[in-house]
Image 1 (cartoon, one colour):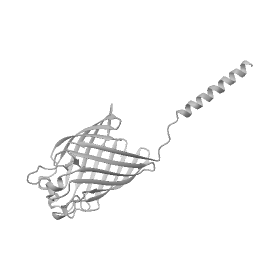
Image 2 (cartoon, helix red, strand yellow):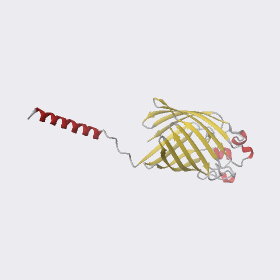
Image 3 (tube, helix red, strand yellow):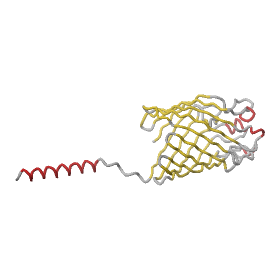
Image 4 (cartoon, helix red, strand yellow):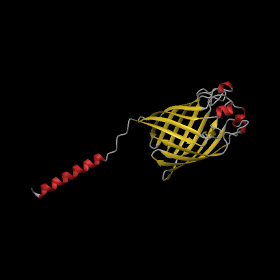
Length: 255
């Protein structure tokens, strides 16, 4: 065999080997859909910085289904105590959230997320005191880089407040990657509740959350929270202002 022929064979063999290596290293195709579950515990469940468990711990769990088209649905639940403690109802100790929406990139680096969520409190008797606590909202969010702006508006009465349809919450947050699994998230929000005396239900909240991702689905967080929620609306006899300053901790496992 001539030297030239040997050289050509060696080159062809190298090319075949390189192609095979490239093929084996190709990324796996994107799955059609994903299903995940989560369970966690927090020292003080805060919704928009307002306490939902009268400053006591909460056990929480949920499930999320996402399609590669951008569509998603989910369910999430937690124990609560505000319906009994603050509204004065006899029943209503569980919150179950059902939500669905669509998320897509509308420009380079700019993501749109639109959807609806309903906060259900099975068996709650808040309507015997004020109005039913069950609430539904629609929302829209834009994310660019590390910054997210989101607007939510109630299409029903808002968490047991009479004549409060149209309540709105605007929030702005940033997720700052600190490295080594740490993320720092500053957040500011503004809640408005219409048709309340002297706009007493309106407030602004601020929080700073540090999250640590330990890998394998386990994350821990600590949050510093403050609001200007008014005593006239968020405090009742025997209990403190639901929006009082707090430091909360949480642990969550996603699988």
